[in-house]
Amino acid sequence: MSDSTVSAQPQAAGVIHDLGYRRYDGPRLGRAQIVRALTWHTFRSAFGIGRGVKAKIIPVLAFVAICLPAFANAFAVARGNPRLFGYDVYVPQLRVVVVTIFLAAQAPELVSRDLRNHVLPLYFSRPLRRGDYPLAKYIALTAACLLLIEVPLLILYVGTIASAKNGHGVWNETKALIPGLGVGLMWAVLMSAVGLFLASLTGRRAYATGIVAISCFLTWTVSEVLIQVEGGMTATSTGARIAGLFSPFNILDGVRIWLGGTSPGEDANPGHFGPLFGVFAVLLLAACLGGLAARYRKVSQS
Amino acid sequence: MPASQAPEPPGEPAAVIETKALTKVYPRNVTALDGLAVNVAPGVTGLVGANGAGKSTLIKILLGLIPPTKGQAKVLGHDCATSGETIRTLLGYMPEHDCLPPDVTATEFVTHLGRMSGLPPTVAKERAAESLRHVGLHEERYRLIGTYSTGMKQRVKLAQALVGDPRLLLLDEPTNGLDPAGRTAMLELIARIGAEFGISIMVASHLLGEIERICDHLVAIEAGRLLRADTITSFTQASQVLAVEVEEGLAQLQAELAAHGLTATAQQRVLLVPLGGDDTYDVVRDCVAALALPLCRLEQRRHQVEELFRDEEGAPSV
Image (tube, rainbow over all chains, first blue to last red; front, side):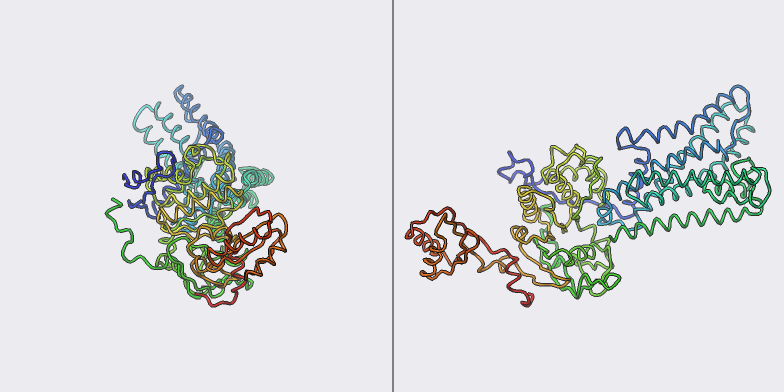
């Protein structure tokens, strides 16, 4: 695209910005492709890619922390032990802690920065519609959480089948892995909605981190304490069965048990309250996504 | 490739912005726009009005971000209420307030926003570099925006508006927070974009004296209504004055000029003389010489357009 105006400018030699302006007549991406570009950009920044070294510390630490048990499993299995963790409840406490830290650190990175720096008018003055921005952020954070949760499961799987004696063993592992991946997907879908909505409430990053961390930890702790008070994980009282509803993590665990998960997890068995856990999970997801949409509806008009 | 294309594609509307009876009432009966009807021709147009006159509301409606309560607004022939998305591919918008993250480089930021304007990856990179060069940030473009001065930040804001090759730029108070030299540089840049890049521009400002320097047209709004819309020359016609400053004898000179048929008005230490033609200079020179006054300044000035508005308030809009 050489332009004749470049050479036509007599004074161009000395003044660098006096080169001619070039129009762009090439193809333009549609809205869907712009959303995809924003999603990809956001996904990368969820791991600090394209940002400074500091932005990579927490994602890397979270990844290392959650993958270590899976590597330990590979060693244990190679020495003849059975698989150390279930795929559907992979190190439950550690997973709660790591996912909370990851969300508390990265959800504000994805949304609070733009709010804080008032970058949003620049997005909304482009072809995107007002719902596209939170949608792209949500998809990206869900994908990032999914990666964080599923990669250790895959390491666990590979580490275990590496020592499998026959095809039957591999098949059994695969059958056990698939529901585990499903649980991971549930976690990613719900927890990133919770994290993103809470983080979008404020443009102050420290507050956003605090809100996400405290909400996730506090509700989880309260829920755990209530379960203990009601007689622990094996209790069958109504109180113990529904105490899990106080925490999104335990709601997820309740849904897992309701859907047929057998490994003991965080919750007392919800028993016939199982559908209630399902309803709560859906309501919480809807509330968070609705809140997120409402939040950006307001922001786009101000 | 650009040469093969006609400079004005057929079907290009005569008006880049066209509003009819545009009304916006916010909740609690706050009327921001009240039956605004205005046609903005291609070129550089100033949108002037005091704070709260409805400038920002108009811009938001033009961007398709908020729907008008009544009436219609069209940008480049597209209806704002229904074709917001199409309009936004054709528009570049520079907001009034800060909108830049401090922790990325200008190149990264403008490239990303180029992608958000629908440019393919490599094109976005090229155009980001070019836009930053056009606004005079070629050398510094790999620095973090947080290290920039206010003037440089304003330029980044302008570059991000330019990156998607818009047909119309909406600039909201582009000289906000700049020192006089920075203001002049920014205004020159805007004038150049309008004249050389062939992009129509609407500059919103509450500083008339500033944007009258670069505009072809002016649109003045007050309390959500059109006060006046016209070309800048008709605003400033017959408004030329000669400012005469003498170290002493201001009153004497005023009397002497009056004797020669020139009604000069004193404004602090300066006499303002209506400029009729070249002979006005001669009369002033002769009067000063006759009184043997120490003349220190003789310059051509224009009335602030602001004053014209005050004079012509209530005049029928054009």
